Amino acid sequence: MSTDLAGALAARPLVLDGGLSNQLAAAGHDLSDALWSARLLDERPEAVVEAHRAYYAAGADVAITASYQATFEGFAARGAGRARAAELMALSVELAREAARRAGDGRRRWVAASAGPYGAMLADGSEYRGRYGRTVAELERFHRPRLEVLAAAAPDVLALETVPDADEAAALLRAVRGLGVPAWLSYTVDGDRTRAGQPLEEAFGLAAEVAEVVAVGVNCCAPADVAHAVAVAARVTGKPVVAYPNSGESWDAGTRAWTGPGTFDAGRVRGWRDAGARLIGGCCRVGPGAITEVRRALAGG
Image 1: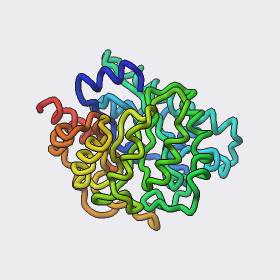
Image 2: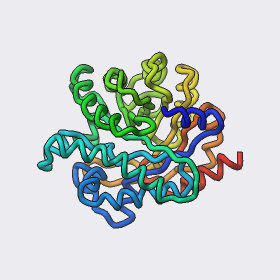
Image 3: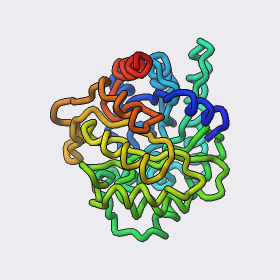
Image 4: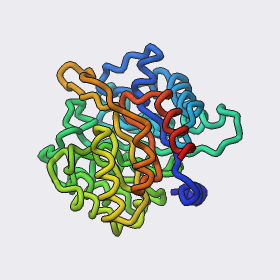
């Protein structure tokens, strides 16, 4: 984490953005492709800038890049070679930086380069299950090359996010060694366990002594599951905690649609802050309006 970001976290919790994909979809962009929002890095980069701007305008301090589903394998399936794929991954960082420059209000903003799990590349919903049948070494070999590209683009922090499985977390923790850019590690959870069923104490404990990891936490989970996870992460690791749940709706991989009621309530965030959360926002289906409410709730507290 950049020195100024670390200093800012010591002073106050920072507000993360919300779901990039729903903001792009609200602007009329088709995200049905397996690359999801990463496809627009190639086809509509200006749309990505505008989506980031919407969250910065809503009060976000930190933007998470459109690289969650950006992988060499995913771009290759669409005919892009490794050089072009690397350009597009690096572009994701620059687009978030450009959005911050255009904000024009003098506030300091930061960029987190997203690296989603192996299951995101598969685009079959397995990022909510884990247990891909891959070894830790195989997963490390998958993640390391794109993490090298993202780190070279000089984000403030790498967001190792929506990790469903402690085994994949172990691979990611190996893969970030020596990159020169700090990272946060964020699991997607179900109740008091990872999506793959491991206890949170065990999962968070993997990152406790990893110097490159400057924050741990949860994302893309039900809002009701955040408070317990934040408390466990803070207790087990002693590190700042990141918390950005989805809207509370459920993802149906078969229909590629969200179902069920939304339960995101910005009134919860002061409790997360008090339990140790220092980076707080939303994930899928949490839009700019909710991020404004998060900022107001934290300021009001």
